[in-house]
Image (cartoon, rainbow, N blue to C red; front, side):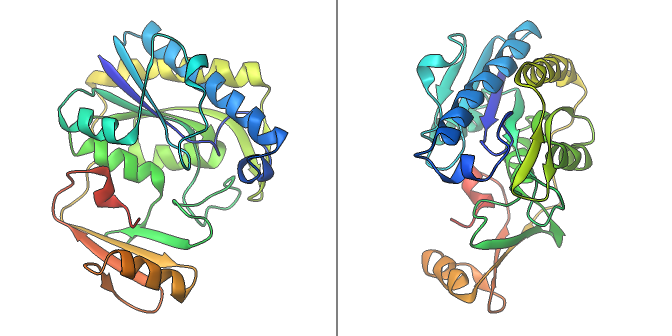
Length: 263
C-alpha cells in the first residue's frame, strides 16, 4: 500500500503569521521548516502504523527547498513533483494525503488563502465553481483512481476538504484570525492529531472514492490585474482570453498535474 504525502507550508502547525512564509531569511521561516518535518513525520508514522508499505513525500511549497530530507523519517522516500507524476501515472500510488494545506482564495478566516499565486491569481474555477489547490491535487490523483483520504491544515482548509471530498480524515492544527495570522494548537497536540488522522485514513482505502468531475473541464483563472493575465497568455497562447483578467483552458482528459494549472 503506497501513500503519497503532498506537503505545503501555510497549513503547517506552529505557523501563525504571514512573515513565517514570506521572509525566508528569518527565524520564523526556519521554525516553519522544522514544523514541516515534524508534521510530515507524524503523518508518516500514522501511515505505516495504519498498514502502509511505502510512503512518498513531496516538498510542495514554492521552489521545494523547505524540507531537510536528512530529518525525514527514514522509512519515507522524498520525491519531486516529476517523480510523483510519473509514479502516479504508472499506477504505483494507492492513497493521497496533504499535509499543511490551506483554503482556496476568498475564504473568510482562511489562513493565507490562495491558489498558487496570492499576488497574481484572484479566483480559480472548474466548470463554473470556485476551487483551490486541494481540488487540483485530488483531481489529478482521482484521474488515476487514487482516493484523497486525509488533510492537515487550518480549520478553513479542513472544512473545504470535507465539502470537496465527503469521506476524508482531517487534522485541524490552527484557526485563522483574518487572513495573515492564526491561533495554533500546541505542537505536540497538533502532531498527535496528524498522526491519528493519517492512521485512520488508512482505513478508508476500500471505501473512499477518487475525486472526479464531469469532463471536459472548463477551467478559468481570474487574475488580480490585466497585466498578469497578459503574462499567462504569453506563456500559453493556446489558452483563451475571455476578458481583461480571465483566461480559460478546456481539459478533455487529465494526464498530468500540469493539466490543471496555469503556470
